Structure formats: structure tokens, C-alpha cells
Length: 451
Image (cartoon, rainbow, N blue to C red; front, side):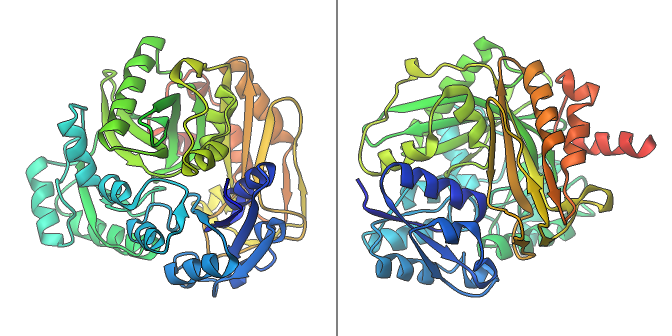
């Protein structure tokens, strides 16, 4: 067992990891920026180390300071959470050279799968269906433009080492391509300290289906079913559920086996996600692999009865998976709503500020992952997500009504949030019917404005 683990992250995921470590009897070390000096993760950890100013580049993206904090604290391992450095191969390689275990895949695997063009080539060799795209990272706008013209519009421009919807833009014609490319590149550089880009054919109105996988160092790979992440705005997921209403048991088996093959082709170890696009003809295509734990991992935990963070830690310590594929049974239905500090009526403008009052809903199979509390100052420097509300029930119909009840009970006073917006989605007949694509939010906003 590790004796001490440093969490190279902040917010609810840092709190989630600290709790898992505590339950395993492992000491935790939090790092925090000056803007996060009063944060819950810094208060809950056994030790807390300030690593710099509010700017992510000077704190949560500062590799040298995080490694220095790890060494000085005596931690043997780092859990990177999601975002920030969680998919940065250079950071993991630096840790490997310092004999620090990163709880996740190796730098070689992250480099291979984090590079979207190389990941695509790996999947093609493994006979896995892929969306047409560039076969190498592109830095030059003229080369990118030429490739986009070649494969045809619309195209999607993606940060090659990105994730979480950042550094992504859609170009529907050649005229707007260069502007979209430069905007995505700048966003990628600010979020991931890298401006390499990847160009992919954009599939119109798909569903976004991802499979959670866990793999150990002994060649065991297991999938834990799918999550439907179709409800998203600007490629940022807002609501996720498991299982997907679009997937039959037969299709789940095929897609799950494909996800396992994809992970094996990448020689993958630890938690990861194989992301697919499902078109209107029920054909699915590999989109990318996220080499980290996902924001939406709780819905998988709810329907499978597993603890993915603990499983990550076990695998990182060299243990075999604690379950086999036959052990994984999907039970009931789970939904997660991402509660953001933002105003949907003002184009989802971020709304940092002080939490005057918070009331957390309770009840059977209702889970809240958050790092906010009464009097907490939501900083303006980071992602606007402040709370995840997750419910589980016997079927999708019951889960929808349970989530509406929980959202109705949730109170966050002092700042604007998207609680009412999410409640409206759950009350929308198209959503209830499962008649959704990645354009759902855009169409829902249009309907909302017409009322």
C-alpha cells in the first residue's frame, strides 16, 4: 500500500480522492493555489502545500512545483484527477524519472492515446472503426486548412492533447476555418500548455457514448458499461446517464468488446474511457480515449457498485483487478447533473462569488460530490463546475423523477447556477423520450426562448 499520496488537482475531484485515500488508510497531501487557500480539499487533506498564484499556469499546471511538493512531503504517488496535468505525458515522464508513481497509465501510453492522430492510427491497426481525421499533430494553420479542405466540411478542430471540451471548434466551411483554428489553438495553449491541433470529420447530430474501462498490469481489461454523454454545450457535458437508452443489450456487448480491444491495443493500464460517436444509423466510431478518470465516473459507480478511485489506487500499487467481466452487472439507472456557477440566461456567463447558503438534498441513492460550503468564495480562475448531483433508481423513468426531486431540494444561494436549466431539461418531453443528439441543448435553448 502507498503510505502517502499527493493530489495534483482541486475542487470536488480532489475531495473525492482524499476521501478514498482516507478510507484506505493512506495519508493525503493537497496542493492549492493562493485563490484556493480556503478550499475544502486543502482543509480535508492530512497536509496542504501552496504551489503558487491563482493562475493555473503558475500553480496547478506548474509541473516542477507539484513534483517538488511531492518530494518534500514524502508522498510516493500522485493522483492527477481530471483536467490540468492528468493527460500530460511530459509531466508523467518527469514523475517516472523522479521515481514517483502517477496513479494512471504510463507516459508512453498517454503520449500515444492523448495524441488524437496517433490514437486513431492505433485503432485503425486494431480494426476498430474510426472517424476520418489527421494522422499527425498539426501546428501550422495552412497545413490544417489544406487538410480540412481535403476531407470536406464540416470539420471539428481539437486540441491534440486536450479534453473536457476545451480547445475544440467546429468549422462548417473553408471561410471560417482559420479563425476557428486559431481560437481553438489559443484555448488549448492556455488550458494544456500545448498548441498542437487535430482535424477530424464532423459527424452531424450523433450521440456521444463512452465506455468505462479498467485494466491492470497483468493484461486484465474489463469494461463497466456505457455512459450517454450526449447532453452537452460547446462540447462540455452537462448531464450524463448510464446505461444509454439508445443501446440495446446486443449493441452494448459489441461496443463493450470493442472498447476492451481498443484498450488492449493501446497496452492500457488503470482507468480510462473509450469514447464513441453513434450516428443515426446506429453505426459507432472511435473518437478518442481519455487516459484518466472522468468527471462523470459516479454514474458508472452507481450502476455497477464499484469504486473506481480505489480501483485506480489498487492497480497503481501493482494489484490485479478486484473484479472480472462476469462480475460486472448493470443494475438500474443513474443520472448525473453538473451544477455550474453560471447564468444560462446570459449565455452561460460564469458567476463566481460567495456561497451565502447551501442545502444538500438527501435520500436513498442520492449522491453529491462537491467542494463548496457556506461562506465559500467560488474563484473566477477555474472551471465553473461547483457540484455534481447523482441519483440512482430502478429504471430511467424513476431516475429522472428522482433527479427532479433532488434538484428541487438543492439550494445554492449567493451566485447564479444552472439548476433551473437542468430541471427544465429533465422535464422536456424529447429528453424523456430519449430523442436526443449532441445538438439537443442548442435546440432546447431555441424552444425555451420561443416560450
